[in-house]
Length: 507
Image (tube, rainbow, N blue to C red; front, side, top):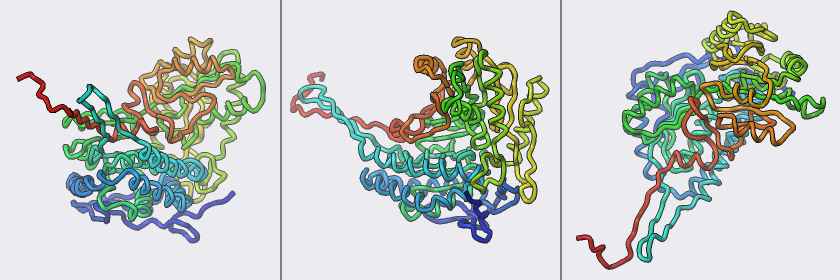
């Protein structure tokens, strides 16, 4: 176990710059309108750098650079593109600890998650898409004796990507890896809460890519995100974030008939059937851990299992054990490898979560654990910490229906299989869900009946590159990860070729 030194302090492996400009055309350029904004660490609440405040002229400059690089990059062989992606993966792996510290300091998540999940998955995604693009093949259809259809997968050209703040480096990898593999140039806008760690990554990998292939414009949604999403100069927009913002992105892109992929909000059910408590064994322990997964990344996950559904016959004892497990979660300095839950990303997010906790109390939900801001003392007193919170109530309450995006789980009971599915699907969202049962038939039927794009069965919060991820209903459009993701970054060119010397005889 270890405690990492904070960036910029003695013994730290990371030093942020005092200021980050935009990264455009392979170099850093100042904002066109001269504005900057402060970036605070949620760990202590202190300002640790400032970042260029991008506007439409900055987006245009980035698009100029991307268009200047797109044609050559798109014509690079799949083998060469794969080699670059593998080099990026190697560079990330060689600097994994430093990147983990950078992300934890900016986002507030526990360093153990950054080390064990976020950064290894970044590596995995670049290597996965390096392999996928090498294996991709076109198609030939023999329409007739002298008529042949050839199908080629071509890059879209220049794509816009808007990254969320909850997994800044991993979500950037989710977008960048398939886009680059497919041969596109990118203009990427980080979340205004977490732009700096992406620049730490960019500084490590910039020399591996031709100038202009990846460009980063910092800034706020209306000032930089809207010009990017509404530009007729992008061939696609990819967005991860809340559903209300996703609606705006669709509207902006729709003006120019630009395709979008959206990974949006969720209110995921986590269903525990009565057989999980048949024995107090390793599986039961695993199920209890599955319950507490609502606290992973401080609950700042679109698929957070924020609704726990427990079968009535085991409800009281399972909930009692799960509550005890939740109270044992260690909250502390995010840079300490023993810390299990860190800080919320911003003071605004902290206030939103605390506001929902007040809503739950006013609605009559029963508070079983947590429910308050945590003061960790010392310099951490200025950080944004919330204790893991359990509410007991009814699925009609707001804390069951609205996305809180914090370490809050709302618990209710169900009577039988049909009741569980009814409650689970009684939501406008459909991003993720969990099913826990020793009975494979029950688990399979539940997984098929639940209206969600990703259903974890007897596990939760695993995100391998080779598994398609995306939402039903208001949780999004399209899929992330998996080779199917290439379809969102390519278009199919069909050459319909006649080898006959004779006219068709129509005129």
